[in-house]
Image (cartoon, rainbow, N blue to C red; front, side, top):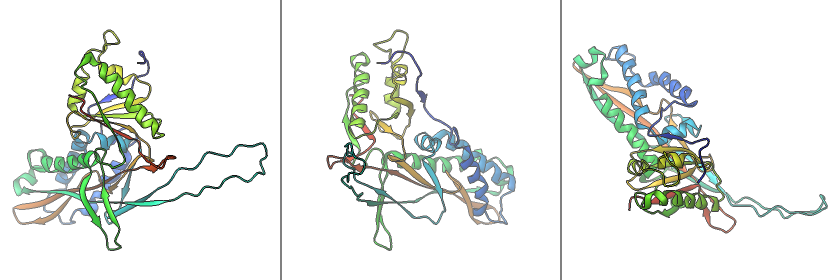
Length: 335
C-alpha cells in the first residue's frame, strides 16, 4: 500500500453543479420557464422558491450522477429526445514494425455495433392549496418529497438501470443498464471487509484494479461504495498508525475519488474507469429536475416535478474476442 501522499477525495455526497457543473444547472433553471404557464395561479416568488428547492435537493441526493456531471459526462438534450444511440467497436491488431516506411501494412477495419438507450421521463405530481402557494414557502409542502422522489430514481438508474425494454417505430430496441447489471461489467466476488483487521480491503481493491487493467482500462478510478461498506472503512488501518482504512484507500495512487451512494446495495462497490469510453449519460434540458403547472382550480394548483435521465454504460470487443468494460462490480464485502 502506498504511504501518505496525495490522497483521493472522499465524499458521501457532492453538489450537482460543483467542479464546473454549475453552468448547465443554471442554464436549466432559465429554461424552466418554458414549462410554466404564463398565467400561473402561483405567485412568481413561489416559482423562484421551487427552483431553489430543486437545486438544493439535487445537491443532497445525487452523488454518482453529480460525479458524472462534474466530469462532463452528461449532455443535456431536448425534451423531444426519446432514444439515443452510440457505437461500440472491435479492437485493432498490433501495429506493424519494419525498417521500410513504404512497406504495406496489414489493414484493419472497425466493425461497428450500434447500441440504443431510451430517455424516459421520471415524474412525480403534487399540489399546492391556495394558502400554501401564497405563503411562498415551498419547504412546508409536498414539493421536497416529490423532487426527492424524482432525483432518487435518477441515482437508482445509475446503479440498477431501468428494467424496461423499449422498441420504437423503427424497430430499434433500447434499454438502460446500470453499473450493477450491465452484461459486460466485471463481476468480482469480494471478501468481508469487516474481518481480518482490514487486510481484505487492500487485497480486494488491488484485485479489482487488476480486473480493470485486464480489460485495458488503466484508470485513474472512481470507487463507488454503499454506505455500509464505507462504514467498514472507519476501522483502523492495519498498515499505518493513526490512520483509518478509508484514508489508506484514498491514498492509493490509482484511486482518484471515493463516493458513497445509498442506492448501491449493501455490501457492494464499483471500481470505475470514469471516461467517455466507459460511461456517459443524457439528461433532459432544465435538469436534473424541473417543474410544470398542469392544472389549477380556484383553490388548488397541481404541479408535476420531472426530469429525463439515461445513463449509458459501454463496452467494446477486446483482442481476445471477449467484451471489455471499465466497470468492476464487487459483491460480498460485508460477509
